[in-house]
Image (cartoon, rainbow, N blue to C red; front, side):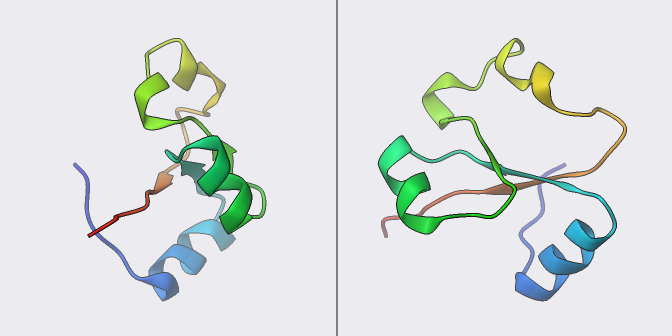
Amino acid sequence: MPTTIGIEETQRLLSQGAQLVGVLSEGKYTELRLPKAINIPLKKVTKEATEVLDKSKPVVVCCYDLQ
């Protein structure tokens, strides 16, 4: 179930081996420069696209809200 978390919780999860996934456009992903993140643009999230993820580890998803 998706849950909104802050930077501290994100850092804790990543230090424990969680995977960071950006669901950003290629331009925004390049601009934000998320270290060690996997980028799967939201429009391309499919079962096949997510097969690069390790199902045994938590996933932290980073998105960009224009509002």
